[in-house]
Structure formats: structure tokens, C-alpha cells
Image (cartoon, rainbow, N blue to C red; front, top):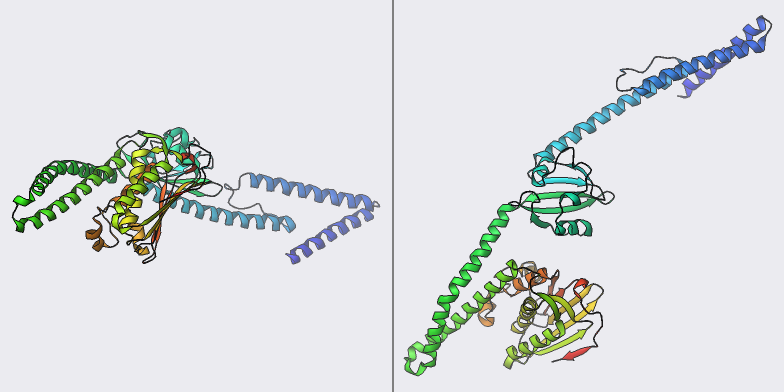
Length: 441
């Protein structure tokens, strides 16, 4: 580059020197110098015009215009940059086409929107699942195309840890699962899966459990009735049968408890979550459940402490909340040794109401915690005979909290007790006045 610039300066000096010499020969050296400068200016303007004409249509020109000197170097440099640009652009277009082709080959729908929700691009599966139309829906707000309140709330809240399930807006027979990811400047990538088959299997499972529970309830009631009658006339029953009757009565009671929990869980899963909502006094509910827990403790003499800090009036389903709270506190009684301590604490902070049930019982191995809310899952199956539980308690608690927009947090370690925390959203608080610290039991 330095060498080319030196050559250009030498040519300019030579041109000006020649122009000055010719002007001196005719007696007008300044006129000769001016003529040389005008000649060079005209040549420069001509090269500039050729450059602008070439830049106006670079894709159609195979080569840059030919020239010499400085302009030749400029044309050659721009021509080289243009070829590199075309090469890189072709490579990017090829990669983009492969990405689009692979995305279109996916069975899951993919939709890209900007921060407002305007649709930039979608693949073929999204075209079918969401009934998008090429040409007309490009640039439209996705909130205007999927008008379901649940989707609009999910899209705008920007909390995408869990996917959203809903029926397809234009195909009610399809069940969709939508997962949103943020990228760029709050742009959004929507992944839409067809989970219709899984949803149908889940419905079949729920219907089977519900129907089986109800069908088993009638014959079990008859069996329990006859066992109770025989127990009332135990003096007339041979001695070698009395132990068998007691065992059958105990197992019958356990089956009744299992069926009752299955029916309750089925109602919580399939019922209308807003049907029975009202104002619930959590303080009164906790005092009642703690009194029942003292009765359940009986001769084990557990120390059950209840503290309430903050407002207790919340919006919810009293029946479901009673079931969830009872299962947590009764579990603490069952799995805490005699004369153990159980602390029940209610508080209402900025993040919302928090119910904590803490015990110093046998504890749970942390490896089991992720599966504790599964139906019938037991961290220690050997405890079944002692506690008489159904294995559905924490599953009921989980679904009760889901129906109240809350979450269950479990922390425990073997031999050091367990802590179960129920976090409710702040929107569930009805009254804002705080209650004084209250303790009982």
C-alpha cells in the first residue's frame, strides 16, 4: 500500500511538472498548470461516475471497472471485498436454509417473535398446530392470534420455568404444550408440542382411578359392615377367629382410607379450581388441624407449637386447603418419635403467605425428595406397617398447592427431621392487616 501511494505521488508530481513545462514553453506556465489540474479533475470525476454506477448494481457486475493508478487500486480492493462479501453471504444463506429446512422437518412447532410478540418466523408444524397463515400473519402479534387468557398471561409474565398446556386455538381436539425461551433483546422462541396422546392417557388414568375407587367403595363398605358386626359379637366367635377378624378389620380400614384419598385426589385433579373459592381464615384452620394432630398423637405426647405472624385471610378452597394442611401436619405426627417436637409457622411477607411444618423426626434421605410427591412413592417402605399411610398425602398437598398457584418446598436429612414449606402467591392475601404473634399448643 505504501509503495502504491509513493507511485501515485510520483505520477502526480510528474503530471504537474509536465503541465508546468508545456505552459512555460508557450509562455503561460500558470495556465499550463491549471490545464493539467482540470484534466486530472475531469478524469477523477469520470472514475467516480464509473464507481457509483458499479456500486449501484454490484451483484450484476462480474468485475469492477478497469483503471490505473490510485483508482485502479480502489477498484481492485472493492472488487475483492465484494467477492468476499458475496461468498460469505452465500454461505450464510445456505446455513440459514439448512436451519429452516431442519426446523420445518420437526414435528414440534417453532415460532419466533420480537419483544412485543410480533411474529417473525414459524415452521410448518406451527402452521398446522396454531393455524398460522403465510403472508397475512407475518408481523402480527401472537397475542391476537392466540386469544386464550391463560396463554396471554403466560406470554407476558416472562416466567417460563414450566411449560403451559392448552387446547389448540383452531383445533380443539389437539392438546398443546408451549414452552417459551427468551433470547436477544427480550425476543421469544416458542416451542409447541402436540401432547394430545399423553393428555388422553392421563385422562384415562384419572378416569380409571376415579371409577375403580368408587366401584371398590361399595363392596368394601359391605365387608367392613360385616366385620364390624362380627366384632360386636366377638364373644360368640371362636377364639381362634378373633385375631383373624381384628387383622381383617385393620386392613379393611386401611383400604377405606386409601380409597378415600384416591377419590379426594381425583376430585382435586379434575375439579374446577375456581368453583369453591372463597375467603379462608388460615389461622382458624391451622388451630383446628393442630388440635386434631394432638388427638392423633395420643399417648406419644408430641409437642406441637403453632405460631402465626401476619394476615391470615386468604382466597382459596377451604376443603382443599384443609386436606393439604392436614396431610402435612399429620405426616409430621406419624413420622416423629414419641415426645418429639413439631413446629407449625404461618407468616405473610412480600412474597406471599408461607406455611412451614418442621419436625425433629426420622428425616428423609435427600435423594428421595424429588419423588416424594409421586403417588404411592415411599422413601422407606418399611414404615408402612407402623404408620398406616396411603402414600397419597404429599401428592394431595402438591395438587392443592398447584390449584392455589403455590409450590411445595421440602428440605430434610436423615436423623435430623424434615421441613415442608408451602409458598402461596401474594395475590392470595385478602386482608392486609397483620395479626399479633400468637402461639398455642
